[in-house]
Image 1 (cartoon, rainbow, N blue to C red):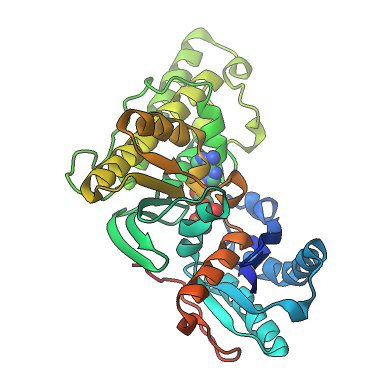
Image 2: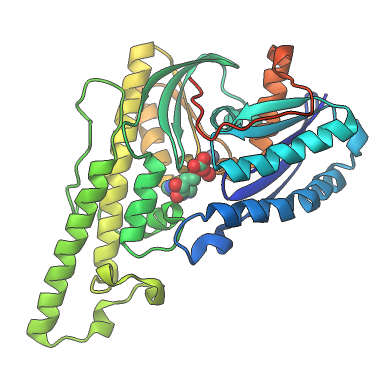
Length: 367
Ligand code: KG4
Ligand code: ZN
């Protein structure tokens, strides 16, 4: 059974071919990061227009890679939500048009289910049941996963997602969009204990998260350090050039132009430490609550090296297994959608829909 997966919910166009016997045969991805960078975030209309241009060439690419023909495709899995309405419509419209032409069914896939199942693309895959920590740009959730399609919510963020906390903090430090990976890289050279940022809801006794307050604490600290730096500069008549050694200074907003590279690295390390500590603590609490011995971490933030190092250390100490997607499957891609569609169809033939009328769900809860 050959499934074509299509992902276009945000700023990545991803296509992949997944064969139930042979595994992943091909995948192709176009990232729109360069398109949106000047705007500091995703511009929905630009995203939609770009998806329109990318889908057909990427389809040809996966067919060529896999040496399959269009006629060999048995089903088309597509992200129908959550995400940007226009972007979802482009991918879903394309999926239905192709399915109609080929006389094949469409499998609507929840974007987060794609992330959730993405570690199953690797060998050995995690066995069920497991706790899933889903950490993306829009979601932060802990789930008990008993099998494909059998999910129950243990806790979630009450406001910002972990990815948003990374991105917004990165922006405050003048790092280019999307800031998560850049903040993480900068943090490598800083002192994680330099600033005692809050660990929101760490002791709340439940499995919920809250990251909005952290952003405010970061903003306050950045302003304070800027103030100190400019006072120092005025006192000493110091040279701004010496203070401001960030690699990409031309794109720095005024708010942080006075901060030294060392100060920025310390801020980054302290922010990353605060976010990852809460994620690790709550994941551990979810394992204790469920009694499960396996943790799966997925979504864009699962690429984060500090989070992985912290979790790996905790897993060794506390005797549980931890699984991540391969780095290429952490952020949005077509492979996880093809896999999720194929697995859903294998478990429940009722998930397949006929090509034709369709809808997308920009807001859609998985559980
Ligand atoms: O799952 P994803 O690609 O898109 C959504 O479904 O939202 O996640 C994107 C998020 C962004 O917030 C991005 O900054 C973050 O994942 N991210 C990272 C890293 N790589 C991507 N955050 C921290 N460290 C990283 N290495
Ligand atoms: Zn995603």
